[in-house]
Image (cartoon, rainbow, N blue to C red; front, side, top):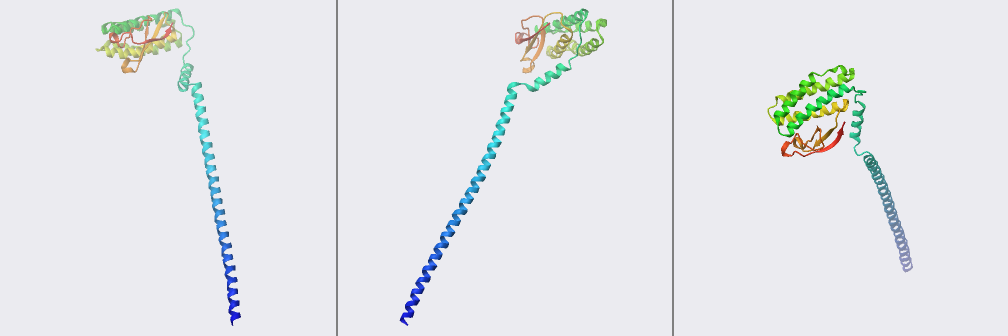
Amino acid sequence: MVVTFHLLLILKKIIMKKLLAGLWTISILVIAACNNNKQNNTHEQNMNHDSMTHDTMQMDTMKDMKHDTMSSMNHDNPDHSMAGMSAEATATKVNLGDTDPAVKKLVNTITSQYLIIKNGLAGDNNTEAKKGAVQLNSAIKKFDKSFFTASQKKEFDKYADNMNDQLQGITAAKQIEEQRALFGVLSQQVYDLVKLFGANQILYYDHCPMAFNNKGAMWLSETKEITNPYLGSSMLTCGTVQEIVQ
């Protein structure tokens, strides 16, 4: 009985050692598996992070390339849209060909009467401005248009009709500020007419940035000296010469 009991104890110890060894092995395998899984997850996260970083870098690079391209375009052509408008305006400009000297003389009559209006407004003299408007309107109606070609007559009549509206308004206006507003429109019309037919004299394209509450306005003058028809004596010399028209 004693021997049997002793054998059972020995057997029990052997079984316990094997059991502990097995559990130890299983624990090591589990820990290893966990570590491996953690490494795999970390690797996948790193790959995903690297992929996202790469994609972000690509997007940033594309944005930078687009920005550089646009900057280059703006540098080469800082006023691209306006350049397009200017090109279109030039393309549609009427080609009137050679202008008869008699036609230029008629246009010179227009500019002479126009300058009376300009000088009247510059001197704060609405009566003088009205006088120039009446004389110019009368002169236009009496023009002998036999010297015009068909295309020249068509263009001249278009401008003459538009100028007539401004001239009648200047004549009827009771306040000098009304005259000045109409004169701004008239000035652009006379300028366009001169550019088409020629001035038969030297004129100066002047511009005042402060006219009409800083909206700015242009006018034609016979002298380099600025005499502002929009501001009169309050700021008579405000403006600059921007073009010489002949």
